[in-house]
Length: 289
Ligand code: NAD
Image (cartoon, rainbow, N blue to C red; front, side):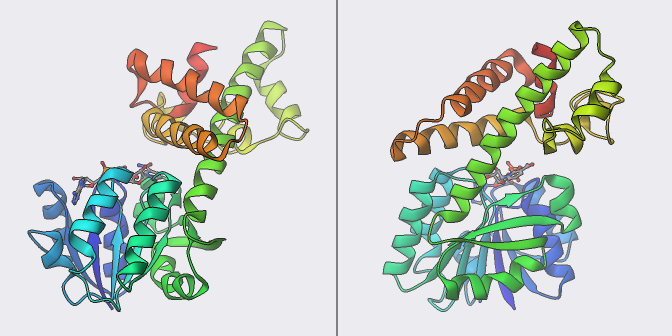
């Protein structure tokens, strides 16, 4: 299948390489020369513009920083540049309203489009073990599934247009909030005289258990290997957690949903990021509690 891939950064670079490994003819474009050079090394055919990359494509996959860029790339260059038979798949994490607007513009121009944001970081993008949450029609999901399966371990149909983005930000709102609650519990346990490993052994098998505790424990030397054991390097950057919590808070305002804890988590990550910690893994917020 001829697939155009737009946005070959930390995530998109590895995803495009996995499409090549699966036997696809991948045509890549990025604004960064470095990203383009890496894509070439990974077996992609590289192009100097979006319209060149999408010509004659069977599908377009994008992995871009934000909704403004996604809208501009699709509305200015992909729509009308790609054949209307091409399936459009945006894997970026963006706001639900923009995702729906771009999908409506694509549909009006005769395209099928899905939003397919991911769970999993750079290691999962490189290793082809991402989880995709897909928003769009049944037909769009059916067509997108085999393409996404080449880059991930799970592909789930979340619902209609924008539902993938909705699932992603609701999930990450839980993640941000449970991480902070887990950090606070470890801090309180220590002050109450509990050994951290003993508290972990109890809580990881009791009702306080969560992914933040048992798969991504924020304390070094406790639980499975996690970014805490590597001085909070790698993993899921605080700046990206903040981005997702802001998207969740914005979506809650638009939908008139009361998300007090989610907004409080956003405020705490905002302060942690502003203190110069945006590049640290988000579990490093334990340093502040
Ligand atoms: P990144 O900044 O490393 O990559 C984005 C790429 O898009 C860059 O190479 C940039 O040059 C390119 N780009 C920007 N504007 C462009 C344009 N107009 N045309 C073509 N290319 C353009 O970011 P990333 O970490 O790869 O994240 C990409 C998306 O994935 C984001 O929406 C992010 O929220 C989401 N995400 C990231 C992670 C993670 O752990 N990094 C995890 C889950 C989801």
